[in-house]
Amino acid sequence: MKRALVPRGTRLMGMALWMSVGGVALGVAMLILVLSVMSGFLDFLQTKYTDITSPIVVIPRESGTGTAIRNSLPLVAGVKAITPFALNQSMVIKDGVGGVTLEGISFKESLAVTPWEKIWWEAPEPLQAGVGNWIWLGKGLADKLKIKRGDTVRLMIGKDNLQTVPFVVTAITKFGIYDHDLRYAYIDLEKMQKLFFGKRIEPFYKVALQEGYSLEQVAEQLRAELGETAAIKKWSDINQNIFLAVRHQKMMLFWVLDIVVALAGMNVVNLLMMSTYQRKRDVAILKAMGMRFQSVVLFFVGQGAIVGAIGIGLGIAMGIVLCEVVEKFQPALLSEQIYNVSKLPLKLEWADVGSVCLIAMLLCVVFSVLPALKAATSAPVQALRYE
Image 1: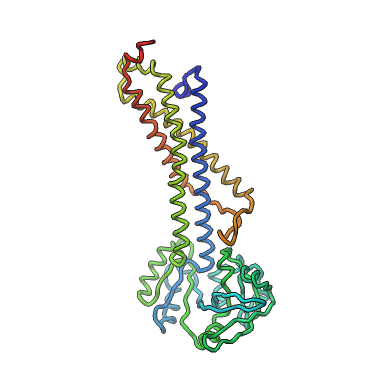
Image 2 (image 1 turned 180 degrees about the vertical axis):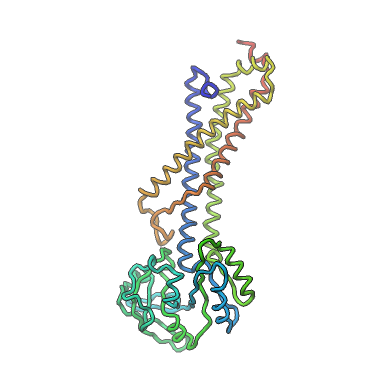
């Protein structure tokens, strides 16, 4: 194979060969690294927003249907647990003012759906949520208003007759989404209904899934079971703008960085042009002896494919090593306020690697066709005239 790629005594051809291989390898490695970063962001968003909203949220459409929905949900295949919650807007006052989205939760029921152990920055002590006016604040909001666990804050309640009600901060939460940690707070569901609405209202329901059931499968079963009485929202539907934005960015970066791979693949054209020039005498003799047109084309296209395969193999190895190095030794360069993370989340997906390899190989083969046609269409007499 070495003699087929590089004729003897041609150091320039050897240099061109390894430059072509290196260009393809570098382009493939960079593309794998970038796609791993975007896949990491998608996985990060899915994990964090699933913790915040749960995989599925059920929203009753009509009053008076809450009890029936609550009784029906645990009977649906794939539903592991449910917990009620409600949302409202308020202001937190403590040496400053911060607008918050209040989420009323049923603490004991929420333990089966929301992984609070991972979310508490400072856990409540003791783990009791049904006594007194308690509130959990996001770390971003707590840092903004300089609030610590044990402090008393005041919540602004009402529209026309505004009043403030004292609450004790019993826990600080950190979901890992900066905007959420800056603008969300949690109180007892019954307390919210009493203070904000003066009566019991129909809550929404967060749904946790059993292992072995897909999100789409359970969502369809819930729609079939509840019909028009409730809206079924997946986590990706609730956060659709953010989720789709990252997916579209990943797709755009894939096609933009394919240009880098294409530029590297164009080195294959230069290599094969030099190869056809070096081998013009050999090709002329073989054609004079009866070698077919397609055989000449396949020889040089095969040479380009081998160069591409070597470059792709080295690129995959370089890409995996780069991902490991970046994940372990990256500096904290990202602004958490903008990107929600201080370090790049990476996730290597083999489907992405396969797509990169396929595109790179196709480009190398396509770029090999022109030099191959040039060699195949050359006239043997002209090539041998001055030999």
